[in-house]
Image (cartoon, rainbow, N blue to C red):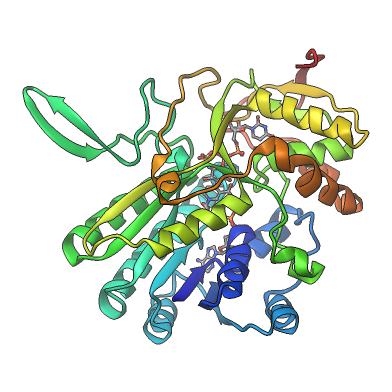
Length: 398
Ligand code: NAD
Ligand code: USQ
């Protein structure tokens, strides 16, 4: 297949590019390095020392003999992205090319608007370019489980049957996103659904949970091929942050009561899920929605798993409860479906099998690069936030 990866310099995008290339697909990557620029803006950096995209593509060719084509430019630039899609003629477009951070989108009006413009306008460009130049291509769009929020009922995969005032219909499940970033994904989903309906495009919205992990089989071939790994308050996700905090000797930053529950998956399973999706495209005019996660944990569960794993490598971990910098339900019902990708053949990796060898040991390798000041949360969803933690709790061994 010809696979175009938007956001191919990012955490998931670079890993995906190598994964498909290694399996013999023709791979192109698009990026404008906006993520690298945001790290400069925030004074933070990837834990892993990532090379430039050009150097990684050259190293990939040297190590495997395989080529990855690069297109450097902004997805918001219609002339750029429409030409790339017209010239590359992709069978599938894997769209990771958005700003992925909830806290970053909540800094102030400028950041909220920037994230909206980048994500919503970029995806609109991609849809129009597909309509005009690649109408048979399959859009594999990274959405998020956070589009649904935390309703007090089960969460289906995108659609549900509802009976109202004596009539029935199958409708999109209601969205209750928890940040301006998560809302961009809701807007994207609506735009994609409309484009499939009117133009007959085919698309899969992957409502992904929180990803963790560093290593993939391809990045393990050579350290020049490592993907980025973030742990700062804006771009680090919960589990990756906790693992770095464990190594840095900083009490784990649990927000609020720690009962917030989310679906999690290893980066290795992101790769599998995207591959399974690409190999099984939907019909023209169809927008499928898959919930892409493997195990769900409360944030406190996660912290306890990290503490247990850290003990195996001789680290003593403490757990701190912070006043929650976000506005979110700290205790809630959570029961989302995730059957579709399993039905296609997903063989999941589990947290306890991967935490020590594939995550903690790699972090220890790069512990001298940890930027301590980037860890404590300082972006507040509403006024009156504080960076002090409330208490350190000595939880019993499970
Ligand atoms: P990332 O920031 O590491 O990668 C995104 C890449 O897209 C970056 O390299 C960035 O420079 C590029 N990009 C952004 N806007 C662009 C534009 N306008 N033009 C060209 N390139 C652009 O993020 P990630 O963690 O790899 O996430 C990838 C996607 O998956 C995102 O859409 C994110 O919302 C989604 N997602 C991520 C997670 C997670 O836990 N990492 C979970 C669910 C969904
Ligand atoms: N949390 C803590 N301590 C921390 C960081 C986070 O307790 O130090 C809590 C948060 O309050 C939240 C939960 O952990 O309740 C998850 O937070 P996160 O930062 O790991 O995840 P989130 O902000 O939701 O965003 C991440 C990715 C985003 C993706 C989303 C999937 O950055 O791109 O869309 O995960 S999901 O959470 O399913 O919406």
